Length: 156
Image (cartoon, rainbow, N blue to C red; front, side, top):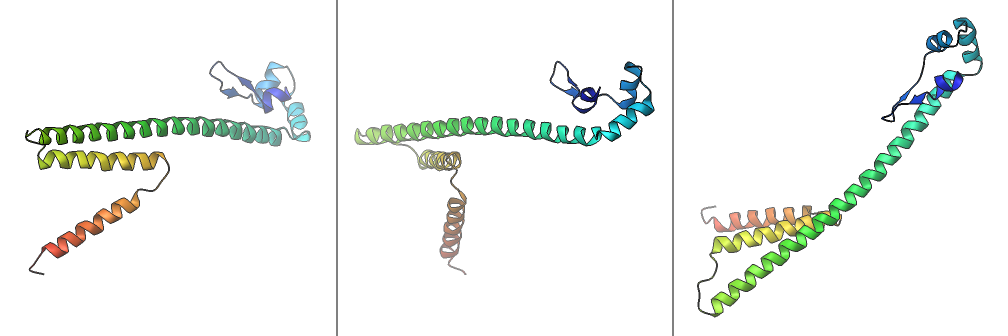
């Protein structure tokens, strides 16, 4: 009876259900008062609380382990994606250079800007996947934009 109160039983989904003193007394044909006294004398409530705390800590540790594995897989995928973007951008730029050498018209400035943006985004993605901060890039870009805005305005 103590085990059913303290630990309970796991159902098919893994959820634990404990029984009350009243349920145990009724199922086992025992006086509720007798069972309450036994539970108080042997600290069933404290044992139940301790078991629950340990059980929850174990589940949390499993979740943390699963999340760490998922995070590692996501970081690897992100890093591979960033590498693929770099390769694609590099191939496009190489093809553009070859076209220009052979006398054909090269990419427009907006196409080159798009490739540049893709490279910067890939770099940020890779840095995040490697656990490196990307704030410096953002700060530098803001400072550079501010300086350009400040120096390009002749009326100020």
